[in-house]
Image (cartoon, rainbow, N blue to C red):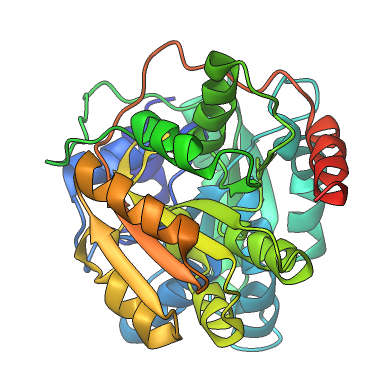
Amino acid sequence: MKVEKLVEIIGSDFYTGVPDSQLKALCNYLMHTYGIDAHHHVIAANEGNCTALAAGYHLATGKVPVVYMQNSGEGNIINPVASLLNDKVYAIPTVFIIGWRGEPGIHDEPQHIYQGEVTVKLLDDMDIANFAIGKDTTDEEVEAKMEEFRKILDSGKDVAFVIRKGALSYDEKVVYSNENTMTREEIIQHIVAVSEEDPIISTTGKASRELFETRVANGQSHKYDFLTVGSMGHSSSIALGVAINKPNQKIWCVDGDGAVLMHMGSMAVLGANKPGNLVHIVINNGAHETVGGMPTVMGEVDLVAVAKACGYPYAIRVDDFFSLDRELAIAKEMDELCLIEVMCSIGARDDLGRPTTTALENKQNFMEYLKSL
């Protein structure tokens, strides 16, 4: 169905969420219609964050907000749904729009398989009435379901539309870009050149895909890398766990701005522990690029100041390859926790592949390599 029709049927004037490729039509519609507007559309740090923001909107206006997300974000909303929105607590009505990655019977990436299996079950367990919209769902069916949902919302409960692959469409083209010049794949190639055989933990999305292809192009083994294909925002914590237990080995974390933002508290834990063998590299293009390019707020955040405030002994931002190579070389020899923020353009090559090894094979190969260090 046309996304404009879905928005009309729901009838809300406030949307907040975390972008998802399955909801690209909705995200593009919101960006084209509102951009980032605190009164109508806010892209939040994580799904729990936007659920709480939606609650504040309802408290201030008495109106029903909409929260959108990929189904992987259901885990982040369980606490605020159960202890804030629920009708046994504050009874705050909210409409959720959830992209159904890993829907049973639909091929998807490994990190989405189990989440896809339990997507509807989790909603049922949270007492969120739900309805799946597919390619063949009619406007009339959605209108009828929304009439049912309004009665549920009036009782202080929450509802959800679960969006199947290809269910929503939007005709306007929205282009996302910035003024940075370095591409992420080239940045990763420079990191690999300096890190040599040191272990790398990389964040979810295109960064891990580009790291995998860089190893292929170099004729190198993939055993050096742990590709965090899911668990957005947690790669630096994984890297901390590795670094603490391999204190004599340099460990590199290749992170993204959206991922860092999603669980920024992990930086405080890193700064408190100060592993001297960990290099935290944040590739910042100010965008949720892997799911379509919608903006993050990280273009407005002084991440270097955040890192220093969290206790990182060394933090710096670079925006050209000369500076990047200099800082990578310094980090290689440094015996202190450091952060390198690398300003990056938006975009990737059209023929970018995906890892040809399974997640389990990646884990096993990486663990065997760590044993040898």
